[in-house]
Amino acid sequence: MELRTRHYNDIAIFSVNGRLDANTVSPFMQGIEDQVGAGYGRLVIDLKKVDFLSSAGIKALVQAVQLSRQHGGDVRLANARGRVKYVLNLAGIDSIIKVYPNVVSATASFFPGPLPGK
Image 1 (cartoon, rainbow, N blue to C red):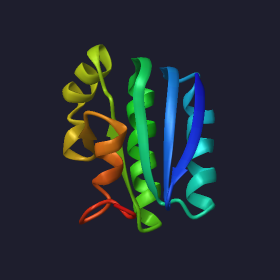
Image 2 (image 1 turned 180 degrees about the horizontal axis):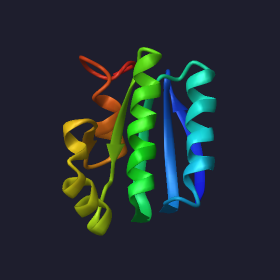
Image 3 (image 1 turned 120 degrees about the vertical axis):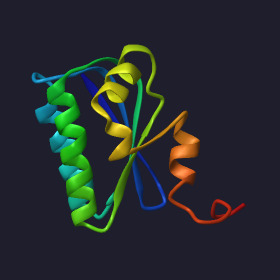
């Protein structure tokens, strides 16, 4: 699994590439903890390039939500497709985490009005 992070205002946007399973949740959670610790409580997790999501990956997503909410933030998921989308739906994740079709709409959901600078 590869994890890239970029920022938009006070939002950390994670691009995950590969599997999110028992073997990769530790570095994933470390990345989440690092960003939340640095003051980025609002998180967007881009699942576009995730090709496998296990129960350990689902647990990590729930832990990310708990951590971000403890720091006044929240988590949005973006670009869930195919089997990953199926697993998220099966697990009922959309009742805990808002899921968006792309990173732009997930990021925009944190702002009540037009995007800053628009």
